[in-house]
Amino acid sequence: MLTRRVFLAAGGLALTGLGVMAALSPGQPEALSDDMGRVLGGSLSEKVFVQINGIRQGMIIQSADQTHPILLFLHGGPGMPEFFLNITHPSALEQDFTVVWWEQRGAGISFNAKIVPDTMTLAQLINDTIAVTRYLLRRFGKEKIYLLGHSWGSYLGIQVAAAAPDLFNAYIGMGQVSWQLRSEVAAHAYMLGQYRVRNDLAMVRKLEAARVSMATGLSPAYLALRDQAMHGLGVGTTRDMTSVISGVFVPVWLCRAYTLREKVNIWRGLAFSRGLLWDDFLATDLTTRVLALNLPVYFFTGLQDFTANHDLARAYFDLIKAPVKGFYTFDHSAHSPLFEEPERARDILMQDVLRTENRLADG
Image (tube, rainbow, N blue to C red; front, side, top):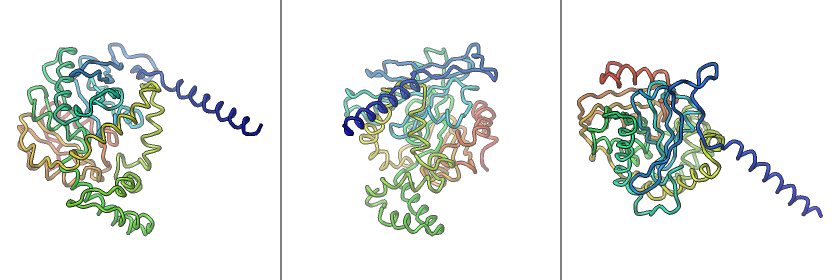
């Protein structure tokens, strides 16, 4: 009898939990409103699906004014959509741009179990990005858009910008990748030193056992420990993110823009994409692949970023030839300056990027 009661109670709790999650998952982004809660006239906040190179792909588009310039945001991962981060750390991008939070092939609302793994390649994602851009140009009647890549998205984005510069007003790299394996090796050394200073002997032992090197790559032990170690030092996704559970996992499940099925697919897509794209991402040295861009280039880099190392990003930036360049160090940011120091990022976008200048850039 007790077992039956426990079973019934557990079933009831599970159904209650599903009911709560369903209520938190209407599947549409909130309308943009003013300080009084009134929907902004002429604004846009929608989730839309488009056939892109044979695959149904989704994006969330938000704009306080649809006549604003278009900014296509390429998320990180590979395979990790970032619309939720704009809710936990509002960027206000939608006040100045028509922001397109596209979820890449195999990721988030663009995940589909029928996607052929062989199509999950960098070349295909470059073609997808170009196709999404052309869709946006047609839909909004623009000649060019702005392209912003974050983390893995910067690895993809800078190669898209090199392939089709005529489609973009400028390229913005946030947490710009240069050679991710080298960045991970530097992160391991930094974290080991910092935990020694803190006398955190348990973490020191774990990091010492979690080997990384340019010759052998990243050990499974390091990959299992990496996020915990980074966020413990405030050098991961954001300075204030202490855990991927509280900083990523929970906010995704609470995000009202997704249905319950779409939230499940975010995690399915992350595993799917990472399994197919991570190794090449890690191994590629962009400093030997993309050294000239025929459009303005801007890097937004957190001084405390050890996910994509600040110093390596600066060294890469210095090698790039472009008609206009601007490098911006965000002293109080880790991997996501746009979300961590939004007022300064917005000022740079308005004063430098939209004007094709670099007056606010580092010396």
